[in-house]
Image 1 (cartoon, rainbow, N blue to C red):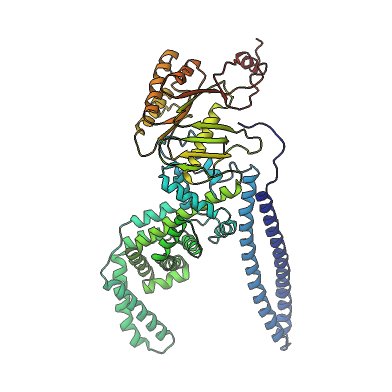
Image 2 (cartoon, rainbow, N blue to C red):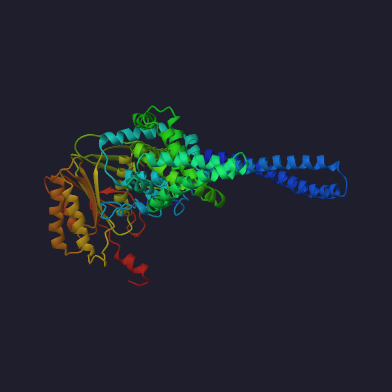
Length: 605
């Protein structure tokens, strides 16, 4: 539903992103120049030090101080070089954040982000029909989350139902976060590297693992024993203690540690393998909750997230876990690993983490949920900031209403996108949309559905104004047959319509969107069955729209009591029936395009 127009106009957000990105790139250029100078100095210092060392070996003892000065200068230069590299990496992450924003605003985002297919739901009632997930999907456009747990929650916002109160609270949170570009930039810096994330599924699986429990005396004994082994070993090596006095004490302690480690070796090995994969997840999570707990929010939903973190001391608790996991990670170093064997360090660290989990599991889950919720809201706020021309809909309580002025498809380029008005309410329960292929009927249905999804999620929608109910959304637009399931397209559509009807009478009204209803049967049966379906839906309080090429179905809109309206989509030029304007017009389409289609095939007619 878009038509060619003038090139994309520069908008203020795009301009601001470009200015910020250019500024960051300039800073990177300056730091890289400093790195080159320091690197050149280091090479020179190494060369001069080598020459002076040769001279010193030949009796020039006075050069020792010069060599020492060069070594000190080289160490300082190396430290500064590493610091500059870290700064460059941070600035590159910041610039990347704005580059992705520029791509989105320049309509160059498709295929460059997260498609969200890992979060797909089997048998979902609109996921595939509305392109919620996948390349070029609504999820890919919205997903600017730094972590996987945030992306998972964002997918839930788009796929799972929400109450009216929840959607209104999301709106308030998104409104407050909308202009917080600086905060989103800081979130983009979480973790040392971009590949580090926070995998919610992995963390939840770990939390579900049975806790490794041991008698309380076991970790206490290991702690005391390892401390004594360390003291005795150091004492013997430094000759403070004689070997004759140290060894008789060391051997029983080492033997006892070995026995405990042997008995616990299997569960410790299993837990150690799991824990070694969690370091980055916990580190990013700790940084994230530390960041948001320092913010002063006003929206109730945001305040509740911060309060849940503060009330459970989530940052401090997670910080302790981060330190323990960091030690487990460092223990993999060959030298430390050999040293740790003498102290049963691996067993002690695993048992320490398990004691932490036994005491802090619920608080950790609270922190994880809070971060996931915040990241989803922040991603929606970024979308709201970048689409300042969109508006927040008025969310209504009560009977089904979907009213919008200049409703557009949110995934189509904004320049040239055609808007249409929609008024589904107590006087108009459904539209029957007639018109030929390529006229824009399916796109219009998707535009209604996608904006309904955005409204429930809490974002502004692609309209000039809108008021709507929070719906239970059901769509039958992209139904396909399945060879694996032995299911025809017709049967799949019948099952989708059955599932839609089953939603009637729930706590939310149904919004149905049906493309070419029951197209797999003859016109008469289709007309009778379609009327029965629509009557059931409308009687159950649902509203919606269905498209069709079969003009016999247009009669359904005229049935007394069903409150249907016929609309159509076609071009204005009868001589050019495939030149569509994508406008929704009242009445039934009477325009034919059979000859135009034949000519498209290269057949003279």
